[in-house]
Length: 139
Image 1 (tube, rainbow, N blue to C red):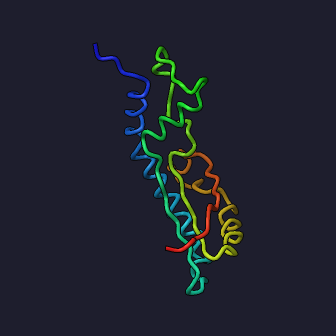
Image 2: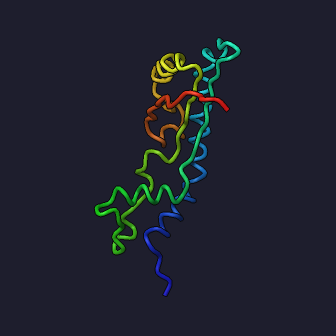
Image 3: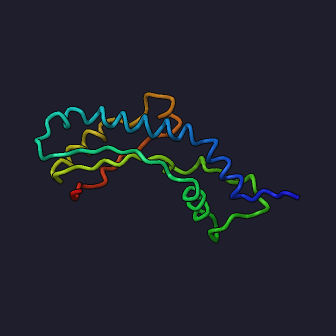
């Protein structure tokens, strides 16, 4: 008898969701790049802003959901009781800036209005909280 585990079902769900996750990540990256255009256009030659989207891989998503469960395990009797749709970090966008003095300005611009609120992809993603993550350290 072929018994599907909770992990198997979650992996299937992940790959069913993946096209929409990609659309949301690409949309958020484009919106953030657009919102940062006024800053980007005013950069000096040595200054840099990079915006990159990322998607949590399948096993990381399953592990993240597992860690949220009591005892960090899935109940095998509740195969259909778990979903990846509650994870808020399946897609993310990283904003890196050099020099550090640009971080405050970038954060203010990105927090001025909700990111992604104007499209169906953004609405499905929920309200995106943007956090300016880092500074270039060189190549």
